[in-house]
Every structure is written in C-alpha cells, then in structure tokens.
Image: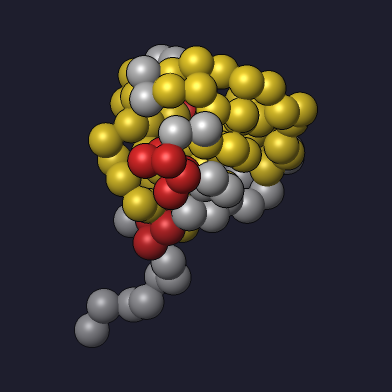
Length: 106
C-alpha cells in the first residue's frame, strides 16, 4: 500500500521554502519575466512588495512583486487591481514563475 506523503507543494527554487500548493493552480498558461508561469489562487511564506502599475499584454494592472520569506528570491507577483473588466478575475491572485519554483512531495 502506498504511503500518504501529503499535498503536492511548490517551493522556492533557492531555499525550498514552501510557497504554494499544486491544488491552488488556476492556470498554467501565463507568461512571466523569464518564461512560463502559473496563476495561483493562494501563496504562503512570501513577502508582498510595494504596489506599482505595470502594462501587460492583457492591459494595465496594479501588481506587487512577491518574494520568498526565507531567502528573498523574487518569485513572481500578486495582482492587486485589474483595470480591464475581463481581467478582474486576476485580482488577489499570484503569478509564480516556473523557473523560480520547484516541486515538493511529488
């Protein structure tokens, strides 16, 4: 019988600090600064930086960079506000870059 090892997690690529759960992925079709990225409904053990407006392909958004709370590696960003009505679903969600996170408990 297989042992239960707990939820599948993502950790910081630098220090392995747990930053999100696999079950919290909303979309794998996002683009980060360095390639593919995932949209998560929740993130943990992170520091949310100051808000700033950024122009993305999908329009203007107010975002804040998110960093690992242990080693301060920048992992992605949090959507604070979307100005386009069709993008409102992103508000309060987190984008973590695939190159900045590693799988744990898989």
